[in-house]
Length: 484
Image (tube, rainbow, N blue to C red):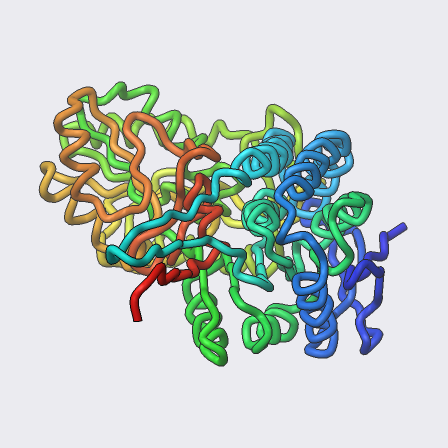
């Protein structure tokens, strides 16, 4: 039986005012999984009004003790319901078991981390003249609209939610329609935490061009926090200009994974496949989809890929499966179009067979992991975010060429450098324009350290104290002690 979810607005479970609903199917089996409200402007208006009322009239923003207790309870209940959340991620998004488990763990850690940072939001005082004192305070922004993606629908839902609540804001959340089920489970958990006043958290499901656009344009929303594609991020900025609300964006990437000939070769190659290229079927903005390799190690690397990639097990979730399905027919078609483009532009090393159609896998959106070699750095394959299990190998001659190729996209989210020469590693890390650069690893993120992009990979930062301060605003209070 398909589950039926509702919006959560002002502490009440409600259907869309239009009565319309959307369906979502299991990407691994095609089975109808659940339905949820197709919300529109009227539903967004109701959610924003509830958030504003709660922000202005409750003691949420004035009581750090209450917020600390609430976030600790939130973390504990996420942990208690790990099995249910993990199952939803597997069914709703086609997650492999380890990926689903890591999403739950990340969400628990995020809530715990920001519960601990609530009392660390300091202002400062100064004496700008002999007869005056100035006080700078950090206050919560107000009503925050968060629009989150489908690729990591729990981890990227709680990532802005935890610091937003910790800062004392009220939140209206619009998840991707492909991730509405797990967002509804989070709403159920929050509804049971008595310290969180009704209206401080609101959930509105629906389509991006309807509910998402209405939230971004709303004149009583003080901030939009969006994670998703760069082109959509541009539209969010345009919509947010209606009242000049603050915008925080974590957008796309075409990340370079740079392997020098003096690197720990086997470790670098295994990491390039497991952590960078094909993790979550390549559906991550941080995917190391451009594998840059020093010319003298190129042939050896390609030979290893030619052997390793066909051995990757594809299928529904088990701990031994390496590549699961992509999220939908639309995404499958997108990935396959790039595979066909790659066959024209580059040299096929492995994969390239397209959608898997035989046996049980034929009912899902499974695509063969694919590697192309000698990809032109200026080609579409090297420039555009595919968001699927497609890896482009690009040889380089020296440090200068590696840096030039790495920076030759509109993106600047993450990068990685593999070498046993720390001077070379730091030289490259300083020159590559990316918000995060890993040395001899890939994909390591920590709640204590900020994360965000340069160039068209976004604005603002997540994680760390910086991720909490994103949801605050500075206020200057000036005290005149004497004089005129």
